[in-house]
Image (cartoon, rainbow, N blue to C red; front, side, top):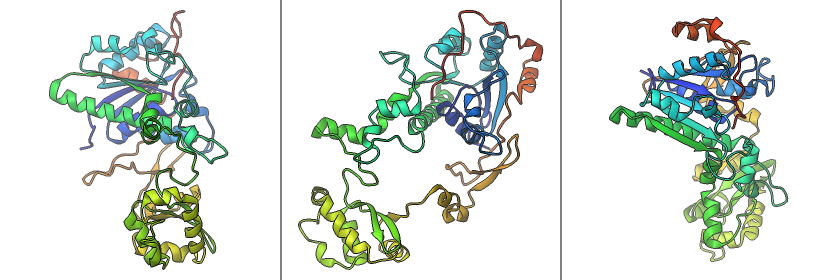
Length: 397
């Protein structure tokens, strides 16, 4: 039995944060019904066309779901959405604040009809406060939360290479949903849950925030290095570089004594503790770089592994795709899409007794007729008459 088998999720979602949470729910066995705007769908469908003509974000985030096209600004579209919610265990949305309420699909209205429903609202900055109505895309939240101020090089602030504000939000939503379902099993009570992209990212800023609050200093942008640990960086070899991350003083001893052949440095007071090494970071980095430059990358990596010193290669994405660890652990599977099968990685949570499914990526509206038939309706109930005071709003995350 899959962990979430029998759970039904209705998702009014766009882009990354909401779809990531619900894709993991689908991976865990839940039925996920994705409500998409008629004729357009989730705008992530149009980000690019690099995966057999499909968008890379969309195929990553939407496998295993059913797609129904609905005009939520029409009376019939709203009624269909309400009927789906009445049959669901979870309703998740990541539209602009207040958009679901204007559509008559807010948490209070849904739970008045079905009190044991778990309703999750994802927004940029939350449903209250002066930033409530600000646009909130991943780069903007990374900047507003201070994440960009500690990411990059001393010369240039950057955002991360993947949308970590979106991902953090999606994972907190996933955790909250599973927790709410577990509580419902014991109490019968549903839940109303709010997850903010800004607050999710602020939570991830805990280490630099504490340094700011209690040491009164800003963590610098360190590139590959670390503000509180040394040595922790890329170091040169005869044919490239290897990353070394020493986490404690035992690791320092193993690095200089066993790997680099300098036992005299183990108890050298200038370097014997991490606090001392951080205070002399430039000197330590220059010293270690001078010693590593006498080794080839393969030889150095083998010695680091042999003596248990944390190390890694600075791989590009092609090296990740061909990584021997993924191959050895048989992590690749085929995933069906409207354009044909593509490769996909198994979900990272591995159950010993069951392989989590990797369902097909749906075409826009692929399941509309089947879902309407379950409700005793047909496509004629999909009118496009809109009420003047309702709209979808701007999607977040």
